[in-house]
Image (tube, rainbow, N blue to C red; front, top):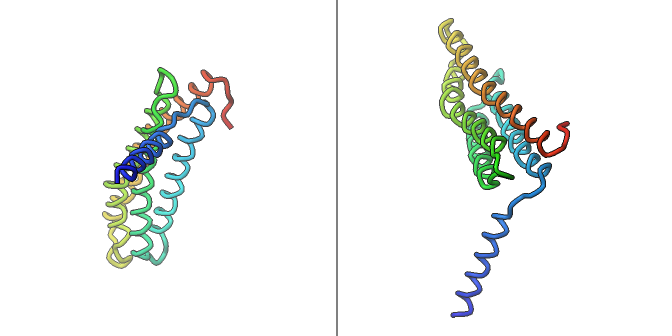
Length: 166
């Protein structure tokens, strides 16, 4: 019994250490954050496509919503676990801020947009249309502001660490 407990503790310690392994290479560090960004953007695109289909499939939309939220939450955790590469964590922090802003937009504006897209075309009013475009503007402005800061921090990170962004 003692052997099993010790084995379990050793296995758990090994698992935690492997998952907490720090990335030391700036390019690899950059790639982890950017991979998460692209994953989130792919999920947002899938959600937007599902919402704007001519015939809205609520099951597809619900699944796309859940997937986008889950992926964004997971991306935040992954980037938080990275920790700073050096004493300047601007790139990491602006990535987290961008992802949290997207998560906030998913829970608020995208949710409200989805409700509007579910309205049958015959019942959709000019007021609904105006509200829809206002929500898209809010989403764009929220995300673009954080995205601009993220891009700037990434460029500074690349310059400081001697690599060129593609």
